[in-house]
Amino acid sequence: MAIQDHVLYENFVLADEYASILYTKLNVKNFMTLDNSLVEQAGMIKKINTYTYAGKVEKLARGAKNNDNARGKVTVTTTPYNVAVNQQVFDYTDEDQMVDPNVVTVGLKGMAEVTVNDFTDAFFVEAGKATLSQQYPSATGISYDIVVDAIAQMNLEDEAGLFLIINPEQKAAIRKDPDFKGARLGEILFNGQIGSIGGVPVVVSKKAATPVLATKEAITLFTKKDNEIEQDRNKEARVNTVIARTVYICALTDATKIVKFTKNE
Image (cartoon, rainbow, N blue to C red; front, side, top):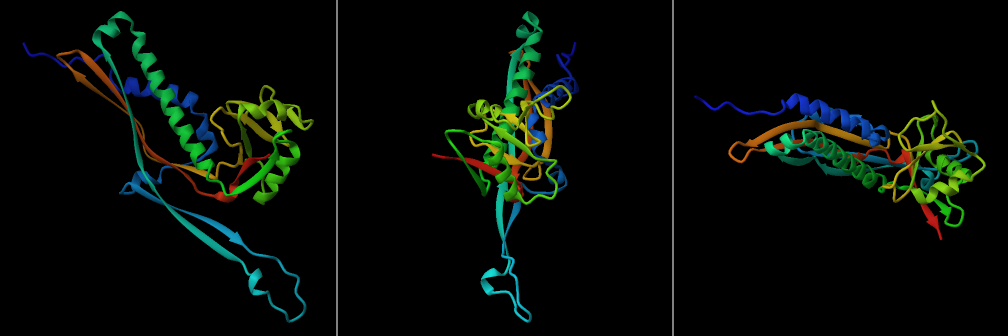
């Protein structure tokens, strides 16, 4: 009699459960533009162009022209990003599953949480590359006036998409600001949101070593393969391996849409 393949869970079952857990926790995707253009492109390198403009407005007399030092100039910076294969594995034995069937669900949850942390770390690495900067006094923290000054640097026509991400050490100070409004049911746009200041949602994250004010256009998540689940099995040892894989890059794509906050000691 032939020995049949022994499969405890079909791939699609694990993939659906993994995706459900992942997207429940993956709040950081709400802070980025999502781009799937890499799916159709060959290669594992993505070149990102970022642009800065410098120029001055002059009031001219009749017949006069702009001075050379006031003429506008666009500077283009090209940064190559290597598309990364982000993979993790989880092993369990048939005996593990027989003792406690929850071991697979717990393993998938753990894999999803590690993936969330990976995406979040990638986001804050790119956020740290922001070229616009706003200082705030270390004694009083980030206030309404500081946020207004930061917004002014961005020169936005529409401020509706702004969000402010702070770390826990800034939370108490910003809550004491008279212009801070605590979050109410139905007003929460993001996980971790504690309220708003000047109409801008305020989100707290332990990963935000440097607070940032941004729109989702600042940073783009380029996905080449999204949440691929595979399985392997050592039949003799009865060891099952679940493989979770995502292929992507996270890149700062518009430096005019993000301001980082630094302490003025």
